[in-house]
Image (cartoon, rainbow, N blue to C red; front, top):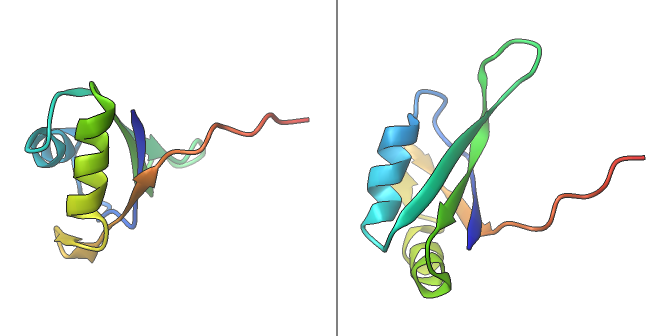
Length: 84
């Protein structure tokens, strides 16, 4: 399951996110999204969990909770819209 994680602290690392989500199950991938122009983090990431139930557990446990000074927005990622 792919999970959207928003309102991240700009200093949050992929390792810190992996550790946070690993408390709920196997983490397959963590991708912090950076601005193409500046290379700086945009404040959100995607976390891929190995099992759907682990993803649902992580969403329920982490959405709205504070992490590194920011209140996280955590939900199932929507499919990427196609660009025209």
